[in-house]
Image (tube, rainbow, N blue to C red):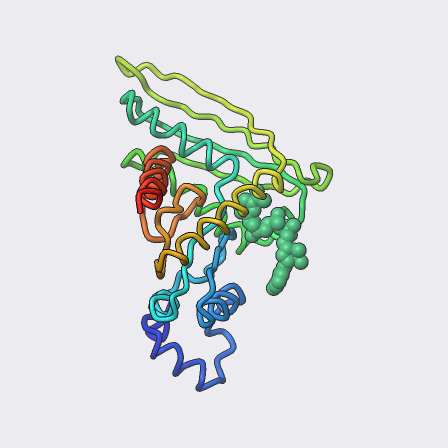
Amino acid sequence: MGAEHQSWPALEAALKGGGRKDLLPASSLYALAAVEMGLAYVNFTPSTGASIPALLELAEKTGSVVSGKDGKTGETLMKTVLAPMFAHRNWKILSWVGHNIFGNRDGVVLDDPANKAAKVRDKDAVIPNIVGYKPNTLVSIEYIPSMDDWKTAWNHIHFQGFLGTKMILQFIWQGCDSLLAAPLVIDLVRLSILAQSRGEKGVLSQLACFYKAPMGTRVNDFFVQFDTLKNYLESCRAK
Ligand SMILES: NC(=O)c1ccc[n+]([C@@H]2O[C@H](COP(=O)([O-])OP(=O)(O)OC[C@H]3O[C@@H](n4cnc5c(N)ncnc54)[C@H](O)[C@@H]3O)[C@@H](O)[C@H]2O)c1
């Protein structure tokens, strides 16, 4: 990100200057169109979208509400539910390995090394953020066409308990990707409209529990995120 991305006047001037086709990725051009019109923008993908200071500044001006990034629907949801348990029982996570195979169009897209790197980064960052140290982690994503819209994630968690005893938790997640995502997308739309009807602007950090890499907060712990959403909705009801 360059100096022109840091404020809306700088980005607007750079865009008007033309010439630079690489100024914004496609996802951010879509975000700009929505934000400029004061519409709500939800980013369920790992792409950059509205997460650029200049676009966030513009959202405050136009009354647009934005949230993202990267829907938390399966393996990462499990990670952000389980990691707090290790922290609260004072078990040290030594390594966390996750192998993912799936066969839908997202699988084809993630076969591209650059797209895969962004997804792996989102999936990999949540555990250190929750437990406060970096265990040895490995995330793999492979495209297996015969799986269609189904995703299998095998996770192997090696951890250390009382008196340094090493133990293992393994789980296998088998989910239907689109059906996991659809109700979250519906809720995100409803919650974005609710926020906008209340005069909120800019990043909706109360929606963090829906995302792998939430905007506006560094909290990844699902329970803390969910409490934030619950408290927010209770405060909406009270008014
Ligand atoms: N469980 C989930 O499904 C899940 C979870 C987290 C994140 N995501 C993210 O959501 C996104 C969509 O996933 P999907 O499984 O629905 O993928 P998909 O490939 O089935 O659907 C993507 C759709 O976007 C359209 N599209 C592509 N480029 C476009 C463009 N430039 N303009 C307009 N439309 C365009 C395609 O035609 C397609 O209909 C991916 O980035 C994925 O990483 C999905």
